[in-house]
Length: 314
Image (tube, rainbow, N blue to C red; front, side, top):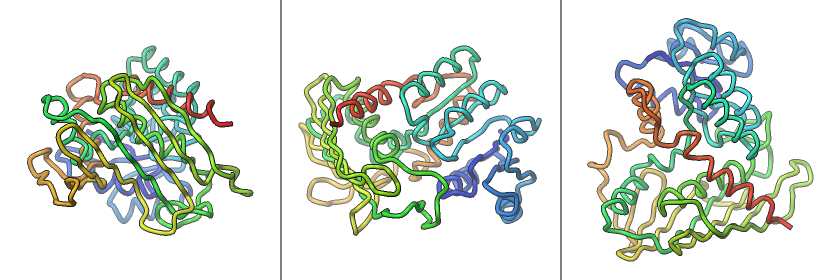
């Protein structure tokens, strides 16, 4: 499998490059980045043969079988559609789009072209959340409540590397998307109630810097989600699962019980790296000619919920 990573110079583009290097019979043959100088330097460092600032140029190459998009959110839909129309399977980093209408268009084009399209809902693949999901599917656990905190200190327009960003991030359509999809995945269906409350908008960035979201699943489980770009402390997302048979705390690829005792996840998957696991699913689904876990159609219901939450803001 020969892969193009678009947005390879960014924080998550680099994570995908590292993850792909651990997967056998996979080669990154092309990378796309913001400037020719930056992307050529990265390609030279990683031993990648082709570098460009043009996605069209990358898509036209015979040595590109599939594409991972780790580009700015606002162009995900346009680029994903271009990949599918070029006949290239595409993994779209979260979120697949920043609106319901664009998400629906992606799904429409996928049906028209038949080209595989997957949304980067990495929480489904983190070993911590996989362990919980396996217990749920085995009938050993039922989620009663999820309490989630997504916190950053990001009062300027910078990325996860601390570098200036050319686009503006979003608490709802990016960061809440992780939890909305995961809550629906772990409870088995689209939520029946959802609402959100926004804090003040940043005077320059024009986005809410704090947000609270509440959801209720069909089975009665509830989720409370707090998000902030104002939190001066450890950044990331931390999940507390309150279940009928135990309480569990998930921090990325690590899992603890309610008393902070670590849980052994060594037998959950072939890797303890969620990014590697989502890339493995993407590649396996292409090779096996099947719909992947976290296909764009799977994730559309999460985008519908995000749209509902956005409309609830007063």
